[in-house]
Picture 1 (cartoon, one colour):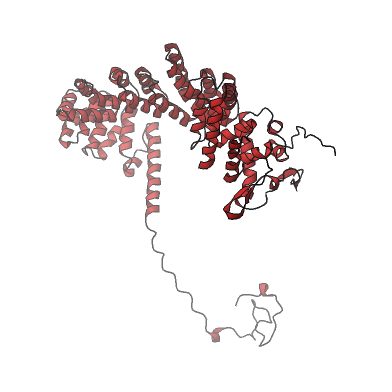
Picture 2: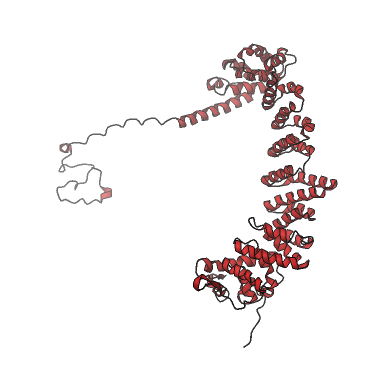
Length: 561
């Protein structure tokens, strides 16, 4: 009988080649780390149906426009399975002794009893060295007995072998180590050995599939491998957000582990560019949190981000981080000059803690209400008379500032309106506009008193007066004939908004009760109907000709009765 060797065709996957009895070397070839993972998943998926459901698994291959069964190519019913014996005993259905392909299939089997039986062959020295990668995968198995047996085999093998074996298993151990529940043992047992994970293996992982790239970055950060440029390349160019985020975190940890000033400065510059260029907002926030937690950014770096970064959340997270930094008080001046009101307010709230409480009164006239409120809160804690301070600022029209006018009204004393009324005629438009707003806050200026200010020469004062009249449509309609074009346009907008608001309010009101219906007209009595025998201009001659008479017109052409 002539036998023919199976060639490397595309139809036969490594799992099918093992099923046909080929050895591990012939089925898998060189066997990269990803190939072993795929082999394990393929065999496990193909044998799980028979192991747990007792059914027959059939693989289907799409050929053209029809689906044909390929059982003659991959009949997984021929794979080893667990045979129940008498007295509760059992054994796998393989040859005695089992062949190399049967042991490999058993190590990947969906039934944990078959996997454990394959690992137990190590006690009788029947476990070939070619299946050690599959044993390494079993060290992270979900079954406790299988994990224990696999780890015992690896402890014995790795303890007696030389350096080449850990190098061969290092890439696979890194991939297995990514399994959350039980993969830590494999990652610490093999790649943790000195020189186990070579630069070539790390480069291969970082240029492979997504799972391999994540595993390579994790291993580089854990063991301090020289992969700084590769990590930054992935962080800047990879399409996957998770890979980019892990690349930045890995580069940060490698830069901190190096301890070199030049490396740290270069990494901080590239990190700042990453915060500006990365297209995913979540990646930026995630990597920024890592940089803060690891102490990668200095207080100056955080102050720069808090004062001038273009993204609001990063500015505010950086502000919180720099204020919690041990050297945060040294960069308060940069935060006090920031454009973001949240950053300025947080810095003002830090002044008293930094021993600079005497600088708080100058922020009572800040343009931001948030900053003024923070300064008032800090000064009230020291017993400062805020009302007297604002009255002093507003008493002299020559030195009054617009923010002081609002600050006085924010104290909430109606008696201060007498001090604010003269400011309505102040030569500075900003003071006049703030005086209008302040008097409205104190309910000291009625609506009809705002009409003269709608014709003020300054557009800011006119806008403030018109905005205050937005709830008085009757007064607004009187300004539709104003000589100023911007006033007419603003009045039309406010009237339209008022109309829409009233429509919305009407929609929210309960629906009115429906009007009473008119009573239907009473039917004519039978004796008032015309005599069928009399001629009619609107009725055919056969209408009501008598009982049993048939109408020659179809029903849809008959006149209504």
